[in-house]
Length: 263
Length: 282
Image (tube, rainbow over the protein chains, first blue to last red):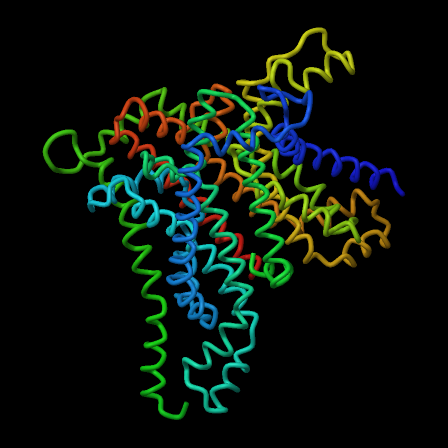
């Protein structure tokens, strides 16, 4: 091996230590037996996971976050899949412009979306409510579904649908029996990104905080400002576990390669 | 279809598929941002239109400093991310072989963790009696006394780079993947050194990846505030000030002005990004 190669590999190794160390430390601390957050830990225990379930605001906000992520993901699919079906088969200039517009929420600062939406939705009478949260989360989740479904559908030859139509299938039957099964990996990837984005979002949810609408990240942030104990680590570990499980399930069902085509 | 009239009708019926998403985003994405900008132009009393806030903002030394600091911080994070990301992307595309799956996994895994989790990790690692100080003082003996890391600008920048550098790696890797290896080999055969072949062939061919990666990182850094709220560092940036205005000062018109400025920067970045993507012909 040449010297430059050795240096490159050393640099890459250092890079991944930098990337993974802060995360691994939190995972380890979530199993600490100590009453404080420090590394290395004096002993192992599960008590901080138990503590999560004793602290009511964590549980309440976890339920809000899960419901919110599901609603935002379903709404994104209902709005996004039809648009993606159209955009994937259209090559005109204005279709590109519309795609850019539909994906643009990804590029706008979240804090601005959150702040602006709070005032706008209050003026409409939604105020700080679960419905308002659902609307804003759908705005930031929708682009993921559109992007993944468009990419997957674009890679599928129109010949399959044409064949179904020639054989006498109606438009709806063609969609249900041919198109839908083919774009399923794209929908799965879109749902996965959408769910994780909503579940993890802090900068938008922050503006819609109230006893009934506090999401888990908002409650964790508030908790961290007053206390620094390992329950935040335990919650983070659970959250990471959820994300990894979702990723593995999606991989088993559709294959991660097929899904990353879309990103 | 033989009948052009019905095909025309069918085509337009198809475009109805776009309607739900377009209407939804027009109402709940464009209108709020528009409404927010309007608020920044509204005078304190009565109705009308005023540029007073922008004039005040752009002449006040403090606020001008905030804009500069926001842009400089994001640019610094983008530059550091790209410099760190390039060798990693190079290893991933050209050298990793059977390890490439593992490298991609290690790159994606941090993206699945929350900002709160990473910040918590940084706070533990760099606490006064944390792991890093322990290494430096006791194990390696480099320092005599533990250093104060938390609330320093350096640590805040490192934490921002940590969040954003995977995006830079992925942007550069995707462009590097498309660069024909034979071009570099050709330069080598013609007698160029490995460094020269890299500098004069591969690097220029991947400039677009560096550009898209840098803009992407810059854009996200520009809007981020959670890391800066939790890790300190003494920065005064636009998102941080919006956050403070919302929480304490409650001057919403000023916050609207700041978010509109932030929005204009974001739209500028989006425009640049699109130009780069077009040039790549994707």
